[in-house]
Image (cartoon, rainbow, N blue to C red; front, side):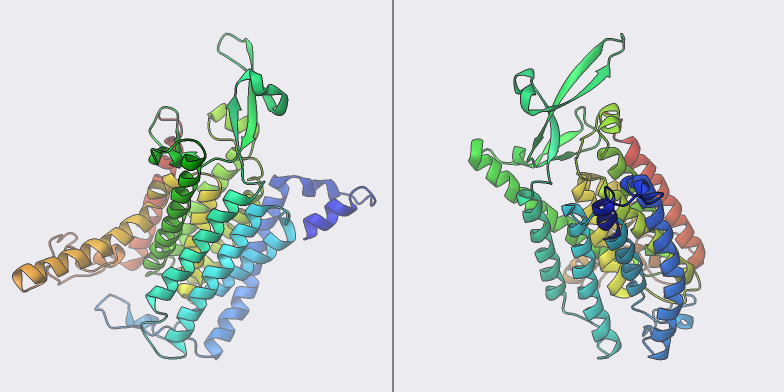
Amino acid sequence: MLYNILEYLRDSVDFPGIGLFRYISFRSISAVTLSLLIALFAGKIIIRKLAKRQIGEDIRELGLEGQLQKKGTPTMGGIIILVSTLIPVLLLADLRNIYVWLLVITAVILGFIGFIDDYIKVFKKNKDGLNGKFKIAGQVVLGIIVGVTLYCSDQAVVRLPVGDTEAETCSEIIASDNSGTEQITYLKDVKSTVTTIPFVKDNEFDYAWLTPLKGKAGEAVGWIIYILAIIFIITAVSNGSNLTDGMDGLATGVSAIVGVAIGILAYLSGNIIYADYLNILYLPNTGETVVVMAAFIGALIGFLWYNSYPAQVFMGDTGSLAVGGIIAVAAIIIRKELLIPILCGIFFVESLSVIIQRGYFKYTKKRRGEGVRVFKMSPLHHHFQKEGVEALIKSPERAIPEAKIVMRFWIMTLLLVIIAIITLKIR
């Protein structure tokens, strides 16, 4: 809003420094700073309000070290993350940009679903919370909104190289080859389901390749497949974030690191010079995604001030679903969603551990009459915290302190993020 107002007044009002708002770098730095300050100062007030209303976490006895000490800790702290993210975005981002609104809508929809789930758990005293079917339905609806918007919006395009014969309707970039000879590459904005894929020569994949149909029919089916993939990705990542939110600062720190990586990739993808130099997809209009991710990172770091061990507040589903959704949609916007298994490797293995644990336990119970555990406990982070339980994977024999588990998961996330970025040049 502030950005748009200043842009409107720029030609008629001579205000010192007004030109700085035209730069994404300046607005991103402002966004991360403002969101951090809001999280730090407003967070303290929100936590006090939550504690006063006795909105505390109901801890089940699972035999984990330090678990019962967390009983009564305020939950629904995801409100801090949402407020601290949305205010800087609405002030500093270009509200004419469709990608900004997709990320805002994602935060609002998944934050609302998570809020209802937390409300049922806390106020209705129902430990199961919102029925899983309604959660999935909300995530599917969000996926459809994102997919259809990318299909319909004129801003959601990819700028791809074309032949000289189409040069009249194209922009151009000039580069030099190894011999110093200048070469002109012509680029054209197109609606496409192309995305980035790691470890292959051309580094690109088109969802339309998954259908044998050609022409208009093939294009239409390609978009349907793309939208279905978007639905799956949003559902998987938001639920993965939710499962990871089981230790003080775990999901918050992991998400902040992933957010930094996505912000960097968004900046590179939205800059025609860097995109050409790195030979990655150039995506016009995605630069504003950097401002949103900056606000998101600042909000997470500010929230971590209160969520680090021992936590003064938990994010609850209000935060965990929205955090995962923002990461998923941002990755989809910059066409890096196929990097998510690497970027969000912690979310992935946490979800996989739950699937393996439940699946193998049910299988062995049906075959042998007694269920066998693969892990001591799932999600995976609790496996390292548990001892005295029979499981196929026995290591570690003694429980690891929670703070150490969290720090090691952060380090693993940092390594995965580095690997994900490196894959863009490994072909």
